[in-house]
Image 1 (tube, helix red, strand yellow):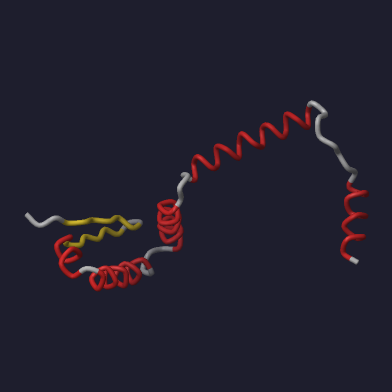
Image 2 (image 1 turned 180 degrees about the horizontal axis):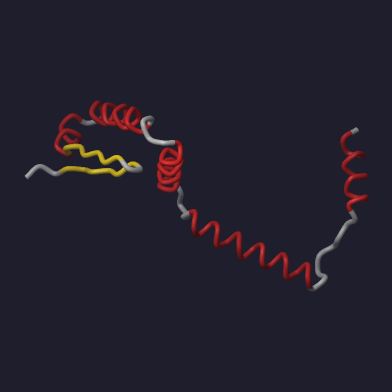
Length: 104
C-alpha cells in the first residue's frame, strides 16, 4: 500500500502520494506547493482566512490559544490594579495636550 497524505482545505479535500514526495524530493514539494496554492485560491475568502490561520499557527512556538489566554490574564491583572488604585491615571485633556506638544 502506498502512503498518502490528505489535507482538508475548507470544504476541499486533497490527497498526495507520499512516495512521489520522497522519491522526487524538493522538486515535487515545489510542484505540491504550486498545486496547493492554485487550489487554495479557489476557496472562499472565509476558507482562505481559516487556512491562513492554520498555517500561521503551525509556525508558532506558542499556540494562539495560549497567547490569547496570557493576554486575558494580563488584561484582568491590569484592570484589577486600576480598580485598586495602583495605576496612575491621566485626564483626556492632559493626554491630548501632551500629544499635541510631542507632535510639534
